[in-house]
Length: 367
Ligand SMILES: Cc1ncc(COP(=O)(O)O)c(C=O)c1O
Picture 1 (tube, helix red, strand yellow):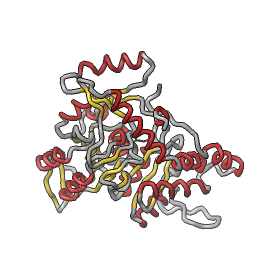
Picture 2 (cartoon, protein in one colour):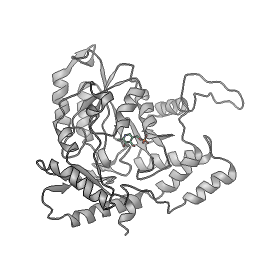
Picture 3 (cartoon, protein in one colour):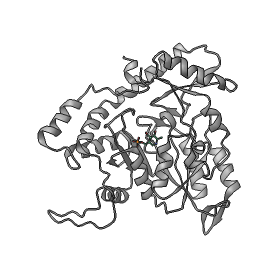
Picture 4 (cartoon, helix red, strand yellow):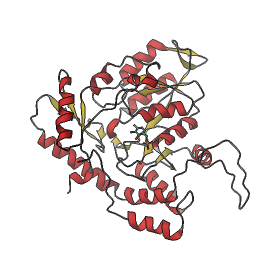
């Protein structure tokens, strides 16, 4: 039983056949626009720009936020490596901060303490006293689809003059205080790789309410080609990151069933909760009173003091054919990020030794 598998139960074949029959399989075609509109609607934002992966969506969003070479970007150490990689691809330097037990996202209180300790204002901008570099942005992540405490994090960002880029790659369909993940910062990102709640095969999107910025990001993700009936004129160095029509066709069929998927995943969480009721030594991670999670990955969290059970639980379940997985190895423990700036990371290190992600495919909990 896989950790998270897609199912194609809607219009997927019909839309894909339409792309093939009409020849519209590449960077132009109606499905990209339709998919973008569906995404914007699902996330309550004005604009969605579909691109080829969640990683490049983050890179484009960081570029849109004006990250300059050498700027530090605050990012949780408890995340998938792509969050940190995208910062590097955008010319920035990941600066790792701690998670909180309640949301698994960035801890706003620990972040504030850290910035008070290492930050200094220069020309109205916050700099890292230890490295001398500007700290330009905060990139919070909704870990396993569970919303981070965005109001608190946006308030910290405002106090210290940081841009916020929301890594909502895992959180399509999740809500924070009733608002959609993907709409909780001026720039947000999604991923549609094969293990996500909606897949395009591979793909991602940048979301924003800012019309001018959206137009610019669309331009630089499509080689900055100036509109003209036949001439090839490009006005800046740009990328070819646009999501192909054939991927968007798959995504459109998938997103048409988003509500069903989220309902199924929430049902699955309920069934796990019933099965694990009374379990000693671990808890099923549950949403807070502020959040409604899409439960992209459903996590069992061992109690502190039970870290020694992580490997045996992973081994026993995998031996049974149940694909369980630990959390990612925290970023500061990966060789390429070992010497990057960071806060104290006690909760991240503890959580990474206690998380077991359970099979979470929506079809495991039919209505
Ligand atoms: C937190 C996080 N950020 C970024 C990404 C990157 O997305 P992609 O795999 O589409 O490049 C992913 C997904 O894989 C992710 O889980």
